[in-house]
Amino acid sequence: MSTQPKARYIMIGGFLGAGKTTAVVRLAQHLTARGHCVGLITNDQGSELVDTAMLRARGFATEEIPGGCFCCRFNSLTEAAERLTAAARPDVFIAEPVGSCTDLVATVTYPLRRIYGDDFSIAPVSVLVDPVRARRVIGLEEGGKFSSKVLYIYRKQLEEADIIVINKIDLLDDAQLRSLHEALAEQFPHAEIVEIAARDSRNLEAWFEQITSSEQQARIPMEVNYDVYAEGESFLGWLNCTAQLSASDPFDAGELLSAISARIQQRLREEQAEIAHLKMTLSPDQAIGGAIAAISLVRNDFVPELSLELEDPVQSGQLIINLRAEAAPELLREVVSESLRALPGAEAKLEHIEAFRPGRPTPTHRFTSVLG
Image (cartoon, rainbow, N blue to C red; front, side):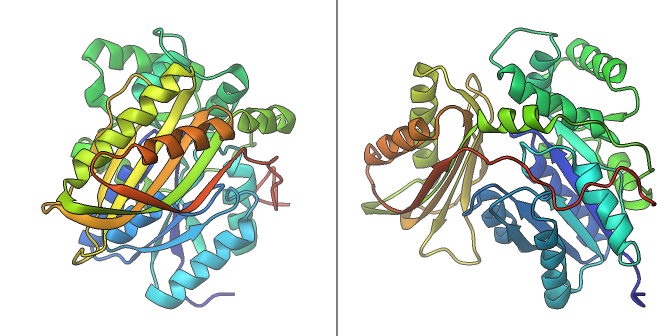
């Protein structure tokens, strides 16, 4: 049995584009300011993650688990925690799972409690939602949305949530927010529902208090049809790409990222491919202190948003692109390659590009109860 105090394990899930990484940053900053040592664990089906670059750029100890979701890489999850413990001895771990992953209670938090209960106290599972996407999914308004098999995953994420977090509440008026809250409460009555805006730190304190102090309550995990789950994931195309950018004259990193995002967005609109999330970072070769520029796009009909900016012009640096959409991987590769060839005022040399559909999820463990 471990003689060390239990570390806190907090998992913040939600579909692609829900704002998980911003929420993770805010929580990590909140805990650090209160004297905690925080370790972050990011997760993706591929490698070369924008999230990892962004979190490390902010100075947080971060481990990345590529090549599959937490449920399928459970041993990698615990090994990542061990590496963070050896390097930084965190007393709080914050894990951000793949945005297309569900069934995390039965395959991650219950196994942690069963196998590593002496080492971790487990927080309630939070699932964030983008409010515009959520209103479309549950039928409150019209707009672009995914096919039924992809939406099966989206709704299963909400079904297993202990806390449903309506993020980006600044995007809705009071009536829209109230009707969304009421609809979620009616369709997912087991979950507590909170409303926040992680980007501007609105309404975070009560949520943070709950996930840092209360324990996840045991209940019977939901049923999951893994055939439908696998088919839903197979409809999504994933692309990860890194490229070295250079130019004869210094350029504005934010303007360049905005131009690339707009071009990708336009091309995917033309192909009627629904964007789940597009993220990009640019790390200047001459940066001091790890400063980077970052941009995000979460829907076809939304505006790309710069989340991190650089004060000075850039002449060269590394670009990371993570693109998730309901589209063929070959199309994503073609669109991104075309967009990089057409860069305004700069040249891109591809270092790595992978485009694929996620494979069938095969959990390492699946426990339907905490005990037994």
